[in-house]
Structures are given as C-alpha cells and as structure tokens.
Length: 483
Image 1 (cartoon, helix red, strand yellow):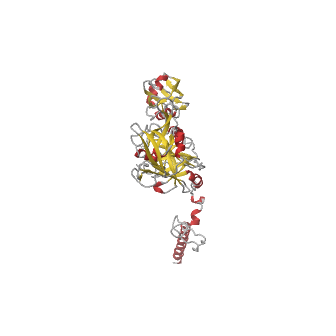
Image 2 (cartoon, helix red, strand yellow):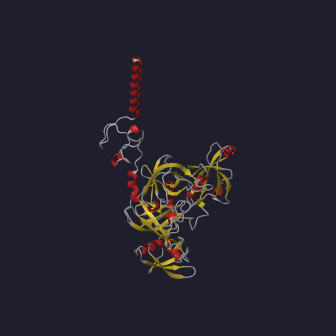
Image 3 (spheres, helix red, strand yellow):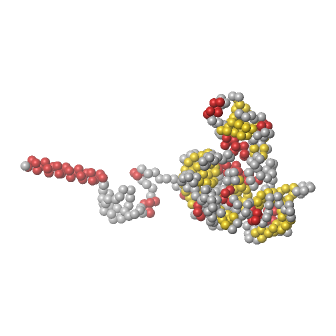
C-alpha cells in the first residue's frame, strides 16, 4: 500500500512541476511596471501597455530589434523643405468653380487642384485639366498669401499648363531626373484633396513607362509613372517627390477601377514641354511623316533584324520629311537624334519634340545593314497658329486671351493680335475672338506685346480696363475687370 502511495505522490509532484514549467514558458513573468502593474501581470498579445492604446511616449519610440519590425522611412524633412513651393489652385468658370480631376468630373467646390513653383518669379506648372475653361485662376501659397494667376501656356496632349503670379523670390521645387528613379523606390505625393491643403501620402514607384492607362486606349506621345501613393481629387498638378527631395512627376490621374493605381507625368517630359509653353503658349510639335509599329519577335525574324527593340516604318507620308530624306517602308528605326528607339511610342515622342526646322540624324536597319539618314523636321499638321518658325513672341495676359506680334496691312507696322481665347473666359464672354487686333489699352496705343503687357501692369486688381479692339466687323471698346 505504501508503495502505491509513493507512486501516486510522485506522479502528482511531477505533474505539478511540468504544469508550472509550461505555464512559465507560455506566460513569462515580467518586472513590475512603472504604472504600478504587479510583476507577472498578464497582457493581451500585441498590446505593450494596459488600456486601449499605447501611451504617446511609447508610440514615438522605435520598435526594438526583438520585435522583428524595421522602422519605415521618415518623409518629414523632405515634405517640410518642399512645402513652401507647393501651391493650392482654384479656378472659376463663369459663376462657378469647376473641378476636373482624375476621373471625378462634375464636382464643384473651391478646391480645384495643386501646382508647384518652378521659378522664383512665380512661374507655376500644373495640369491642363486643372485650369481648363477657367476665366479666373487663384493661387494660394503655403503661408496663406493669395494671388491671381494668368495663363502662360497649355498643352492638352500632355495635360500640362503654365500659369504665373506676380511675385518675386519665391521658393522653388527642383525638377529631378525621372529616368533615374527605379521601380520600387519610395515616393511622396503632396496635394490638396477635397480642400485638405498639403495632404501628404507615401508609396512607391509601382511601374514606369505606362502607356496603356485604360482598356483599349493608348497615348502616342508620352508614358507615365505609376504609383500606389494615394492620389485623390485635388491632387492634380501636385508633385510626386523622390527621397532626395526632387520632383520626379506631376500627379495627373487615377485608375478608378481599383485603389492604389495612380499616374504622374514624368519630370523629364515636363522639362521638355515647359520651354514650348513659355515661348509659344502651346507646344510647337515637329513632324517626321511616318506611320510606325513596334518590333515584335515575329517581325524581327522576318526582317532578319538581330534586336528585339525598334519601330518599323509601315507607311510614309508623301512629301513628308522622312520620305524626302530617303526612308522606305520596311525600314526599322533604331536610333533618333542619338537616342535609342525601343518602340513606336519612343519615335512618336522624340519626333514631336525634336524641333521644327531642325536637322536630325536617325539610324535605321535596312537589308541586313544599319544606315544613317539626316532628316529636316517639319511642323506638325496638328499645330495651331503659326508655329513653323522662331518664337512669334506670344505673351499671355489676364482675361483668358493670348496675344502675339503680327504685321498687318502694307508695310511692317507691328500690331497686337489675339491668337487664342480660353473658352468661357472673361475675354470670351465679352466677345473677343481669335484674330482680333488690340489697338489701345485705355488711352495708350499699343504696337507690340511688350507695350501691351506694360500698359496692363498699371492697373490694380479689380480695376476696369478699357481695350480698343479691332474686329473684322467693327472696332469697339471692351471693358474688362483686371484679375
């Protein structure tokens, strides 16, 4: 009997020791905490302190290596540095403010979009759709100061626009090299979504050279950066910023089929377009005169072409620059203006920005050999206005009208001609039309765009300006409020 009692007692003791050991490993005891919790108090998994959330002091601490969690990047420095160069843009079309942003048309309020200052004298780049149809553009800086803005130039093809405010010594956002940023790199988007000024979101560059941005569509002039940084209505025209504090894209649209798919215009494209908008008011695109197709493995095999990249000429425009230079159908374009051509999109873009009248060297593959041709670029048939030669000294002004110097009638006397009128602008609503000649600003005759601009600068915001306008049917005074 004693023997059995010893066995039972020993078994019970062993069981107790095993239970205690298991409990110790599953629920380890801890030292008493500073808030008075007893040593060894149990806590729910993942909650470092008692209560519903971590204390502010603990929340600011970096996780310890024991957690296995690596702290994420800190964007605060670059956002703080660029914030003064990021502006809020609102634009009035008639009596309402209209928003046309990334798949959210028809929403009306005072928060239209965003822009970045690219020059100290108030030159700002934004999206074309932000200011499209606006008769009044207002810019608000990060310090709260507000300025009326006037249009310098716009290009619907690339969805870019230049506006300017009358200010000096403004902070500038540096434009970086969008070709250099790799897929997977951290980026920050800053904008004014839904009127929430200087909202900052972070993500990565999800992809580059996006040309298919919606089912069945293709942009033949440019490609986009893709990001998963949140882009919402009001972010249009705002910067996509790299970790070194440079703008590598202008946020332009989102894919409404799902979250986390946003697009930005690469900064290198922005840098190509800005000089055109400033000199011409629009983009003076050059023209090669070819219809091309991207090389496929099957085409490369048929033409015994040893590389997987290039663009094959499938049709030549009669008397176009390429035909005049000696190109033939079936030629494979491999290089244009010393830049490699990977597909049809590359040649379309490079040809469009090469420059009217410029002589460009291009390399093609023909009959199993590479040949070089010199092509003189022509003006694209789609260009509006007289954009075939040097800058026609286009200047932009308030009222939604653009003017340039022209010679009218016998002799070479210069006049100020209206070359473009923004739809539904103040000028448009007062009957000013393309081709009208502005003879006077107030009592001062104006013979060129410089005199015209200087005369307008004498007026304060809100004052009425009298323009003597010579139209085909009549000469009349038009009174417009200075913006």
